[in-house]
Figure 1 (cartoon, rainbow over the protein chains, first blue to last red):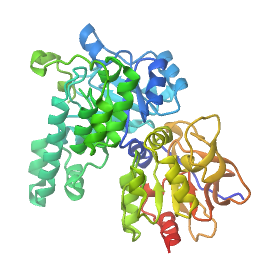
Figure 2: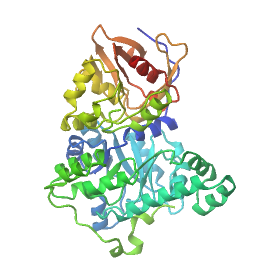
Figure 3: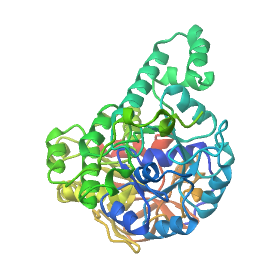
Figure 4: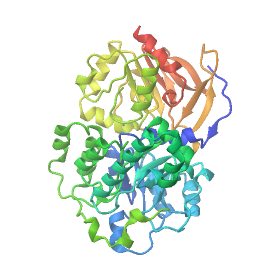
Length: 300
Length: 183
């Protein structure tokens, strides 16, 4: 039975934001090769993030961190059936063009890599491929949405295995959304100015009481309890960077974080999956990182 | 809604708007007392894995075969199928059909279009996101809509599945079909 269909539209806001909606309640894992991607998929990841080195290694080795080698990205795309995301440097629109041409499913304009532009982010409206961007507060999130991002994540402090900054950013986001919702129409412009937020998007948030896109937690999540706490704080899902592949039993930890993310309100399940995972990644105190080397301060 | 992973909140909003009372299913106990089931969009490999691990596959199969009105969207359609082309993942087999995952390609090929549905006065705003299509069906499965000749909305008795995401639109006709089945 053939049915007539009208023209198809690709790359629409609904299609871009829609994929992020499908990832909710799930875990997106950083991977550097096809083997890790396969472990992630078999462990129940909803997507993988392809990059050259995980944040902990970028932090340890220093130097300029860039988009991954296209061959590596393609190997990962070949290896798994779940969506593949990849990171481009802040403001590096050509790295983003390259990633779009490879056919990745989402581009992360990421502070984990070395910024390529110290004033501008990528004009994300110019792409069919959707973008996710990091944010520490509501103003930063809304600036990224105004540039065309279709998904937000907290920045946290990547590569530390220390969840404190992700918690700070999530709580600040919640507090500022509540503040916007409680503010009157006559306060909107002043609030927009103080937050550095585009006023029309701020009005939308004030009206609905939530971000218009999905907001995941990222940056320092290393254990099942970390993931469940971020979910209880109201985020929509979890990015795990170095936390899995810098730990002891990688597959077991990956599975445990997936289960803790689904059953985040059930401490008995979180306890059960947390048993015998081997060593977690070594953590770093945020105060021990020199101010100029905090990744979360990248982005404008 | 089966709430292991996926766009549960959007379905909850549609159910509430269509006159139902949404609730979340994560364990076999949660299945008691529900009058209809929605399996949301999400990642079918993740949903299938968690359903297997937490003992939901058999209880879901028996409730659905006992007549529980059920709707699966996208990943939910895959989970309801009996076979996936070139894949090996846990399936419920509630609809005797073969489904092809990511049949339109990757995210850059995801699209929206107006879809004609059998017996409906005007087209449905269909959103396809890394969507599957039905490759082959048993003859007793009713095909209600197709895209380029391939079925994307199917029904057999009280079980419905679509490759697109009615929950991402303001159009509740698919959800009302499910709620009407509760009677």
